[in-house]
Image (tube, rainbow, N blue to C red; front, side, top):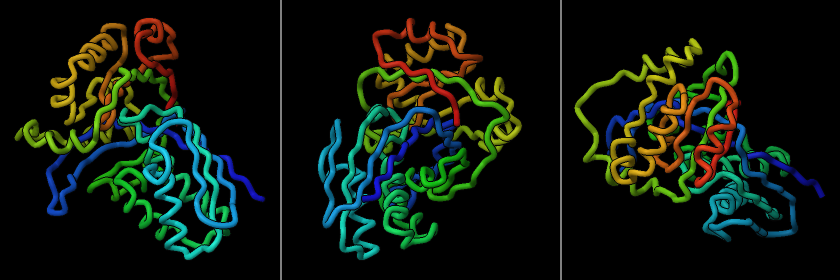
Length: 278
């Protein structure tokens, strides 16, 4: 039987602007999503019927987004056979790195390949947005400027050279639902133009990009979780060019001049990863 081995890459948010709540309950945002060299692995194999799913970390069974992606794909394509999915996690949960969304996107793409491409790219995008706001981005797996709730995706050229990043995970999760429910009290009337930030990215102006990082969730999240504020300040004190919360999750990343092991030593009480943009 055909077996596919897939890598589901994480992302960071280079800037995140929350514009406001939509009539459908979601929020309109602007952000640049950047894939990074930190990934989960997924093994897909066709089986006779249904979905066989295993993971080394929760959520297990039909609560996992991989399972939901497979279920949606089989239903929409009316395929009568099934799939075996084996998921091995590395990306931290609730960190704002998009691990669940990335895995769901890989399952959609992988199953489409496994079953002979029964759907086109547009249909896959439609499947993806029903699973989560970030899932369509992970179908592209390249830097992108996103708008709307995340479904309006404008691919961007890669940075002129890969960036080294340090990821710090404080050993706890932050719920995206909680962050969006509480953000209304922290959105200010202050205007900031994301277009300026986008130009810095397009010009690969790394120092200015790093020094102008801004995430509208930070005021809420760093006030609620003071440990994250200490991590961010320490990253800057140690010489990171810039530091930011990724998405609404608990991971703080720093942009570095080069790969530097001192950051692993300095944050040894947490989970730490040195990664590159891809």
